[in-house]
Length: 342
Image: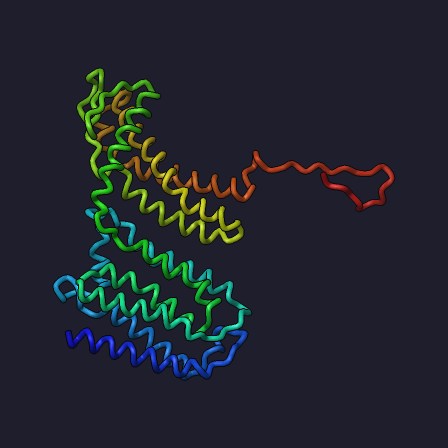
């Protein structure tokens, strides 16, 4: 208990110190020049404190690991979160993209960032008390956004908030495995329907599919074939894609971000259906081993990314066969160089 109160006292001391320094800060047209050397020192101390709490403090997994160590161990096949390591990399790229749009923006710190920083600090204390590493990682965006708001103002914090909160996608969801059951049933019915379109007659029993003609043995749609792992990875890609497509309207970017759900379900249905088609018309052993293991890489992700590209082009009006044709009409007596476009 004393350790927790000591941590709260240290955090409050640093917050109080840099907020006092912040009160004398003047607006500046440059985000780099907005802070004095003393301000930079306070901000660096604040970052080091955040890194210590989230990345180094051994308060999780029986008090032997930090929240970051817990997170990296949770990125595994059992949790269907093998793609988790990609989230921080995408977040850094998105942050660089956000910072590039801040050039010329006036920077002036605001005490309103204290509220977000305080929320993050409370989450950290709650994480240690409950031994929940995901709560500590969930506090990180609040701490980072609050720090940017305090030092550089609300506009800078608003631009950087999305990349910071994008880190939430790296946290494995509790009860995630139970959600795969519904996806298994959906994949089973979709595969039964898709195989039927290709002339493959099947019999469905729960998540088991059997050939009606007896040409191949019963296949079980396991958790790995439910598409949940691919769905979470594609959600990560589509949300980042929608954020970076900053030339589109907001509703179009949201549509891009949410498109991962139907695209993933449809692509996985075609992938699983293709396994039964291969078993029926090519070779059951090839279908259950080679094609099953490689169809995700060779079929699912290319099809899903192609769907995202086509949807982006459709929303941006850049699909070739949907572009409006322009016809140049020349006036008979018009001077040279003057044309009307229709």
